[in-house]
Amino acid sequence: MIHVVFQEADIKVLGKAIEMDESLAGEIMIIRDDFAVGPITNIYETEGYQSRRDWWKELLEFSPYTGSLDIVDDKLAAHQIKEKLDAGEALWIWMAQNQHDVCGYYWLMSQLKDYQGKVYVLYLNNLPFINDKGGIFYPAALHEIQPKEFLKAKKLARLITLSEFEIDPDEWKRLCNDNAMVRLLEGGKKIIGKDISHYDNDILSAITNEPQKLTRILNTLFSKMKVKTGDVFLVWRIRKLVEEEKLECTGDWNKGWKEVEVKKKAAVDVAISE
Image (cartoon, rainbow, N blue to C red; front, side, top):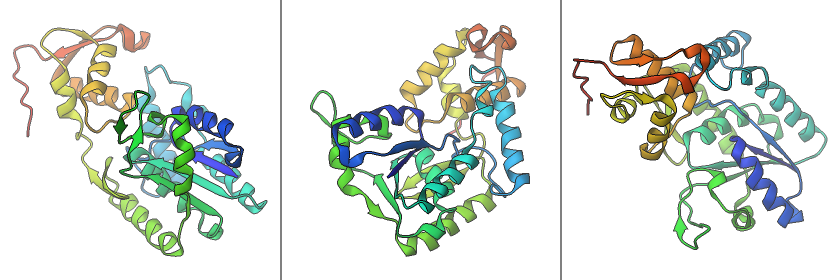
């Protein structure tokens, strides 16, 4: 059995669940790219793949993750998954109710049409779980779930149907052709495209007239945003808003995020649209 997740933090919690239940025993693999943002036109072709890598290279500049582009090789991961399926293993794709996981699912399963009957999905969509305080909650990410709760979740594993193998790749192809730079989960597995500036209002709401450390702004954003995206993407949008003279920043970007402070543009009333 192979398990696939789409967020780094999911590996640890799923690994603990596997330790509790040997029937789940299997290798955990990860698809690391966040296909919910950025260009995806011709994503499976060399030109489209390179365009996306170039885009990420721009975003990762000055970030704490500048070396991560070299270790993200989802094409290789997909190839290895196919090899394991050819060897007779079954694949369980785990995803929670967020655009990151669902877009990753679309990207992966669209390459697995030859393995219908071997690929299972566990979509924890709008399902209640028990948190560490005994309360009921609806997780937006797998790593929010206690490991012991995964033992109940495993009962949700089901084969991806022949119909889904026909319909879902068409839906992903539509999204690739639309090539919106931001993609959101509307419900179920429905992904809708949004403009590159979609999260700008959240950013502007978190920034004051007084300088704040960039890291503090990110903490504020993640505590208040209803629909979250990655810190690298948010910082890139902050840099763009500085270029558009809606924000001001001080500090040396070359020394990293911790050295940068951001505030609203002086003497400019930055309107936040509805």
